[in-house]
Image 1: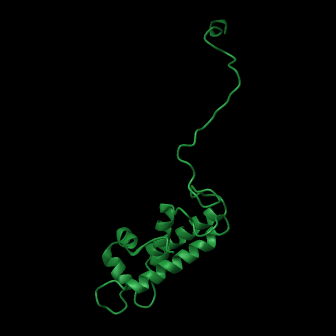
Image 2: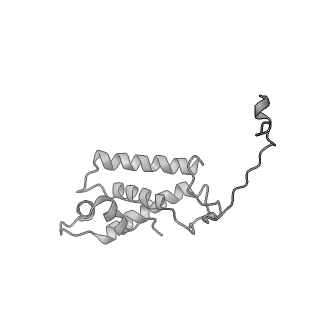
Image 3: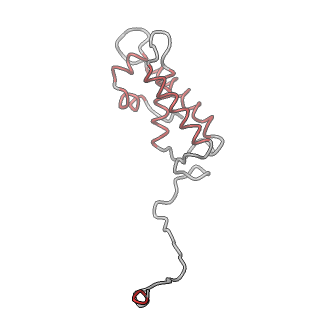
Length: 141
């Protein structure tokens, strides 16, 4: 299962760039097989970081993983005729850094360790000690 799709790549980077990265035959169209492999490889790389904290596959995939998957897949499509630009390398490095933060529990995906999204309607309960000063005692202050 890939965390991102071909459409996610096009939304993030534009169709011209996705064509430039994937079109090894110079036909002017995207190579969907190459894109699928890059997304699958990127997802496998992401799973390597996530498996330390979450059971895989995730039941609910946060949007952040689609973004990270796109950055990793974009980097993986560089090579042969498509050169990695500084922006592509930097986004890949940032994605890997973010995945390290997730693995090390410094960044939370918003899902519990069982891989499920937390309840949205969870109530918060606050308790505090009794008041020391109130409306009747402030005039004595």
